[in-house]
Length: 633
Image (cartoon, rainbow, N blue to C red):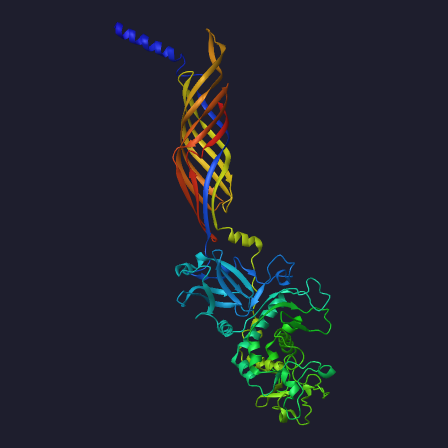
């Protein structure tokens, strides 16, 4: 009996030691709090464009046009030697369509007027074999683009690199005109190359004008047909087998002006003094098939009667002479040539080094012969000094007219022969550029700069560390057993956002969870209030202030919204610690929350334009700092 009494007295003494109000401590109560928080978020973004095409190695229009730009612009066709800071646009009739690898992309340039359909990209292997590595569904006219190599994996599979040789060819699914045109380009062996430039700078007051985009397009088509002409077997046969002499001279011989054709005697033979100006047929053919490299300009509106200018390093004609039609090829047996063909061949003769004198840039008989013979008028079918009709004199060496076939005559000289073969190739549909066909082709529509940025910014490989800011809300109950120790149980909600570089520019984070904190107060002060009832007066202890630390664990679910196009979530345990200060019912806290478990959270990203992932890292180094204000009821 005494033992029981002693135990009871000891238990009551312990309760007195812990505090007379252990079951209703002045610090106890429900609470709500909230405040600002900030921290660190670490990400790694890896995104690539999603191919809009179906099939491996297929380059469809949507993919080709992502990086497409026009070959010719108002600026780049007006290059000025020694002044322009950019490189001039260069053109070669051997490579009007070029393909190569540079900057980890397949670089494709089409400088022709054709929209080509379903063309094959071929790569030459070290053993000389050509393999198809890609297919371009639509290759637009006068357009260039860069296609990332991952869209043409067969290039890497076959060992392709920047030194590899590529070419374009028709495929089994190409349309008839694409096939015909590409086959015609393969027949070109004479290289006419050059650069587009303002020959006289920005001064258009003289004969030379300022190039335009349309001028450059017209030149490329004309030069392709001209190169095909010089490369053809028809041109070779016509030049090597003429029944007249080619000549470059004699010039102003004997003081007679406008002596531009070799004089001949009545028997059609050359006099001894004339022989030095004669060119062999092989000399002429070899010269015209040697190619040329010129500055390409345009003859301007202030040129007066000048419609063309040419020399060993320069070429230019009036813009209207580049506007060919297929009907231009249809002239009759005694029709000399069209103005366009005449002028282009005339100026190209100067590029080849020939003068006005002789029959390389003018037909025989265009001007007075040396000796004051009669001026020829080819349009009237007059052959001088003979009085017969042209057929009777057509095969006289050095005569004004030359019979190329039965009832088919042309002016003797390079202009006549060149124009005649040019027109025959055009009538037969053999020339690369068919002007009736290209007139029906529509120009491509290019993406705006904004859309290009949107289409191409999706390829990223970026690691990023950025601040994350937001707020938190807590609600729960705190319970003290002594003035210096207690526990806090709560639910918590966090919201944070972060801005970063890359395609995903904003991350929104939400978190929900529950936690328990241990509360250790270093100081506690009270005030006392007296309450009187009917029988007695009671003294009540009321908290005035306290200061201490806290520490505990939080179990959190976290969700991450990425630009509204992807979402990822994770779970983690956070250690939370910091300082508390309480004044009456108000509570102020500052602390840190530290994720305990290292997590690499991968969010899959998939849109119509891109695919890839964003890696979000969680761990002890990615902590949050918070500052809260609360109210304890």
